[in-house]
Image (cartoon, rainbow, N blue to C red; front, side, top):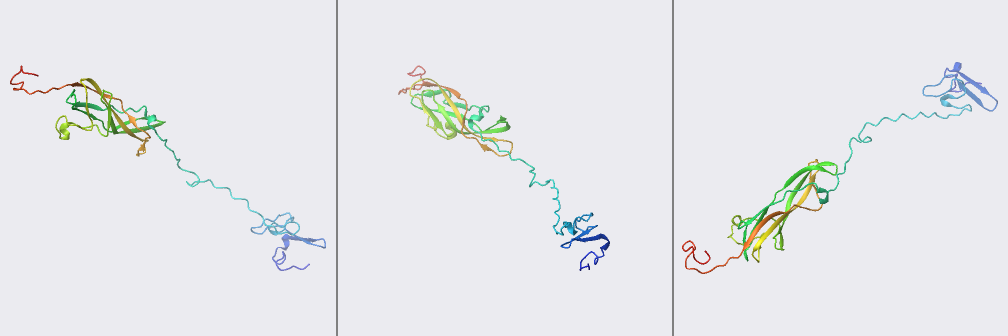
Amino acid sequence: MGASPGSCNELGWLDHCSATTDGSQVDVGAGTTTPGGSGSSNGSGGQSGGGTKGGGGSSTAPPAPEEECETSLCRPLYSVVTLPDVTAEDLRSFVPAVPTVTGEPLGLGVVGMPTNLVAAASVQLLSGPLLGYDVTVRFTPTGYRFDHGDGTSRTAATGGATWARLGVPDYTATPTSHVYGAPGSYRAGVRVVYSAAVNFGTGSWRPVTGSVTSATSFYDVRVVEVRTGLVQRTCAEQPSGPGC
């Protein structure tokens, strides 16, 4: 049979091609493969992977092996840690200092007249373990609770100040003073209410839910009655005079 354009003979492949026929079809085989083809050297397949029936099916290249991920997009280089929320109940091992407390007149009070109580506290930083972390807790005074020892109490925003510091006369009523109604000895007490915040070492402060109250600091007051009378001379002038 004559060679058709593009046949083995025309392209100079005659020595490497074979052809057979059974009268109804022609099978063409080749002993070599073309560049990029996948033909068999035993003549059983056609050019470019053709089958024994002259089919032209193309070969499928094997998938390329997956490359190991080296970027932060598919291999995270960090993990996210969620810090716990802290409540006042969690701070039981962190104990703020008790306030200092005094009064005026020092250790004394007069029935029916203001006795000035003065307490003081400051911001405190305490460090230690908390919920598995090494933390620093900051306590900030936000209120003062005065127990007068006679069954009454008062809450104030500050610890108060002396009459001299306030620039007022002695026995002037102040936000932290108290008037006792009967003579006697009383044990006044002061507690400080603190707000708290926690630093987990990140440089930022996380607020604590709730408040923390300090232990009580005590101050003893002896309350006396004072009677006045009109006298002719002072006690310095007449030491034996009434009330001297």
